[in-house]
Length: 272
Image (cartoon, rainbow, N blue to C red; front, side, top):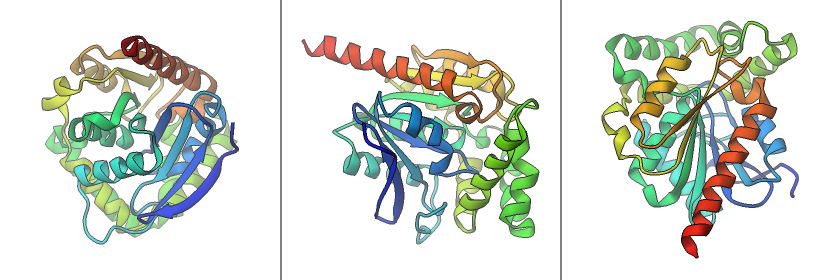
């Protein structure tokens, strides 16, 4: 097992990697960065080769040269798989990252071994009201600046019982991750996204996870994802809010590890 370490930027993307085994690409939420997966980089390194990115325009990654839609973010993630994985990868997408993961599985199915969609959704473009609400976030960030924006938004991403130190960590991650124009590109991409008409086309093993205290996307939306993807398994993480991977990492990592092991065992059986 290797220690978590930042790797040199490739195509302007900042990546962090740890561990060995099947490749697992982690795609963060719309207000976050690779550091949000520290519990997975530490806790899953014995199970998988864990790769976490700062999405284009986030954290230590370069700004895109032009506006990027959800397929553009998916294509950028596909390039990470091609450069850092052995053929294909499991995808762990949290919230917005889960929408990117769905788009990647639809556009580049040969690169995807399985999906873990955590506290995710079908996209904010599913309803006009959701799209309008999402688009308003960019103006809010421009007005408030990253730190105040994070202090107002981050606490709601955790359960009401989350300890103060975890709330402060979420604020710090968000503050360090966000800037314009990257965040504006992301909210526009999310506001336009609606994967619901194509969920039935996703043909890889899929685990849908949701914190049972998620106040952002919530259990009904996660259930809709699981119902729409053939064969998907839905599970809740007890005592966790929207950032279940950070708030209940032991339970979260155990579910992800079991999922990867099951998919890899199936692949081995099929290869015999």
